[in-house]
Length: 315
Image 1: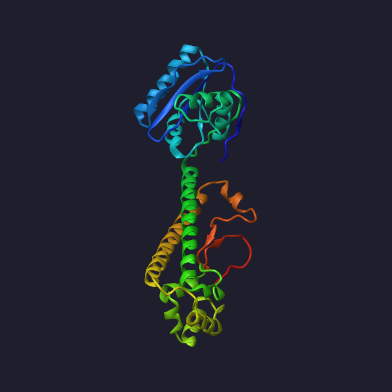
Image 2: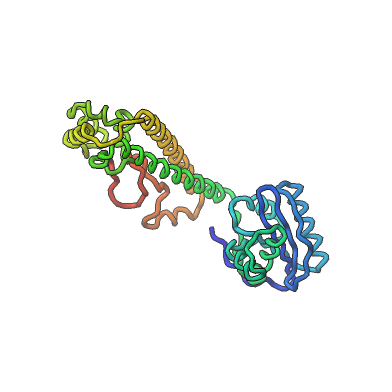
């Protein structure tokens, strides 16, 4: 859910702005005609939020305002508790782009330097110009889906980083591995790395036995021919010879981490599917071509982007 662009602030509106911090915030109240109060600090506690709200109510009465608009920069998660607190209050919540405040600071005093007193004032100036988006605070399953999606994005990023590390480590000890397995994420490649890891161990294997293992793991895509190639490459590898034991420990640890991360992503996606099922409009959205409830296929043995059509890669 995206916020809608907010038009210019109406006459009679109290503009309350906040420079959000992790522990302490700076609040400020002003009007469209420039009347204001001195910026003040309040903490991210119930007592602090109530101090902010009481300041808003008192200033609204003092300046004879009929409405209240609360604005802050859209910078990370630290504003969410305050937004949750203000949900039931008679206010309009908006957020501003940090780029707008930075540029306006440079115009006003030729300095983008951040100060506690200056930032909430600049946010107020941005709101007067009408550069803001309404704040959408999701509830129920919509809020649950947002948290699940955020968690999934973080762990998919973690998985990508682990895969990059794995490819680099495999290259060090066995650069020729990619001649057989261009992608270390496929199930057969992970099986070889988990059970044999080093070129020395792979080079001692029998082609028929390894070929049968690879055939079963890949559902017939790989077999004796690829096994023989892998063994020959392992015996004649140009990979490094010193410190290999340390790299082996690292590779095995990464493989364990990958399995754990992938299992957690599958759990998240299962919860996303359940939550979607409880949202009435989701059926129409999911009926659109190219969209699905499970963005990743783990059953294929490869971590790949989900698409609604096309064959899966079972290798």
